[in-house]
Image 1: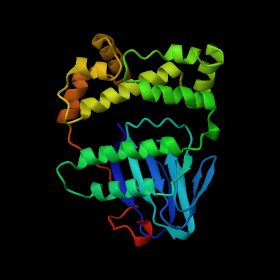
Image 2: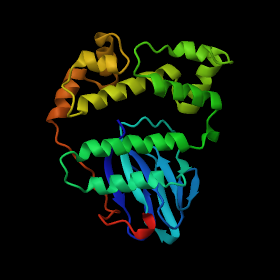
Image 3: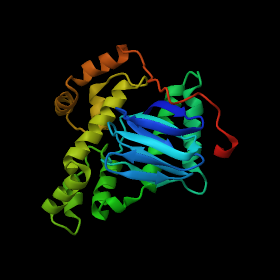
Image 4: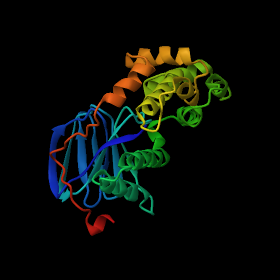
Length: 267
């Protein structure tokens, strides 16, 4: 989960034309600011900002003084935003350090590069979830989302019990959650479990034990897990495992980026 599939950094750039990606894009502004332009939104940013862009979201990037942003593409992430958001780094430059580490690791040939990149992906996503401006989400919806993310791997997790413990009607919370995140709480829970399972099936450290993966992803019954997995991905977990093991690892190209060292100002 939170797999980094590409990391790049612009040389001094003033404009990036309208484009989109089929994966999540995370952009760290390392020096002068600029503006990201979407179909119905403009997002000004400055040094220390991170812009999170959902898949298949057309956008362009412009800056009067030029930028050298670091950008990362993620697959199988737990991020759920429907619109682009902006978060700001902390005073310790924690996000910059993580982006910089991912940049250098991406171009390393170390044997365990992918495992390290996976760790950086999860770290960056954790920072974003912690630092996000939640004003666009209701506080109670954020509570439900956070509870799911903390507990989705527990087969004994009772989502309904948590929702009913909140001081609102169950139907109201279900509709509010769906309005803000695009799916019901139970759909969100199922999606997180199945995404995690798919990621585990792709891992080189997993032997494809379906029953064990099912339990680790919050499913008591392997047969029910297999049925739900096939409904989402079109094939059974065992077939998915075989397909991913036989498929070569691919990394996308990006003509806007260059393999360059970070400037002193980005340290």
